[in-house]
Structures are given as C-alpha cells and as structure tokens.
Image (cartoon, rainbow, N blue to C red):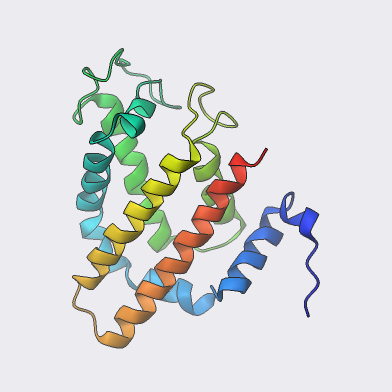
Length: 190
C-alpha cells in the first residue's frame, strides 16, 4: 500500500498532480493520445468555444460572471446583462482565453509549467487570482466542466477515428478533464 502525505496534497501542486494522475492512470500514453489529436481538434476549437459561450449565455447564473472587468481586459465594461451580448469585446476577450486553453491542452508538454497553468485556470475563477470581483460558484464551474467534457466527447466521436484511437483519445481527455476539475475544486476549499 502506497503511503500518501495527505497534507502535502494541499500544498504541493506537483505532488497533488502526480497522485491524482497516478490514481486515475493518467500518464504518458494519455498525453501522447491528447497530443496526437491536436491536428484534428485544432481547426474545431473556434466551434467548441462558440458552443461553450452560447451555453453560458443561456443562464443568468453563468453569464453574470462576465460583467466584472476580466483580468487583462482593458476595454469598455458592460454595466448590465442586457449590455453583455455574445459579441461584446469582453466576451471576445474571454473567448480568446478559452481558445488558447483548449489549444494548450493538446499542444503543450505536461510539465511543471503546464501544471501551474492548469492550476491557475481554477484559481482565476475565484477571488484568489485575477479580479477580486470574480467569484464563480463551484456549481457553475462543475456545470461548465461537464458541458465542456460532453462537447469534447461529441467532437472526438465526430472525427471518425479508428475504434482503438477513438477509445484511447476519449479516455485520455476524460482523465485530463478530471485532473483539471480537481485543480479547480481545490481553490474552493475553505
């Protein structure tokens, strides 16, 4: 039986990632499958981003979190949900971030720098990083991650990959998104 230093899971990002990844069986073969999907998935990223933002726009509970100034955005900030249209500059700014995130998932090495990036993705949705006025509830983050996981699954299934590659790719992304979800949820702990 492996001994796990549980307090260290809360303070050491690399240790946490290694534990969660090992527990789920997320490893080099999964990362290779994710990277191998890049040429097929990259052209589809804009459509995935649009689908995510269309879903977010359907609910005031998710859309309201785009009203405060987003970290790094320097343009006009809307004052009401009515003004915050899907084509608003601030939404376009956020779409660019999501697009880069999806591209990073399929192209970047899964090293310490990537772990810090994945961790920051969770942190920026809380007042712990970025804008102090952004505090997306965990329920909204979970709903979003579930939607992204399903949209990504549907996209992979539509690629018409051979069965073995398709299964390997789906399993790899599933594990990756669970790792990402853990790195989001950890910033909601008291």
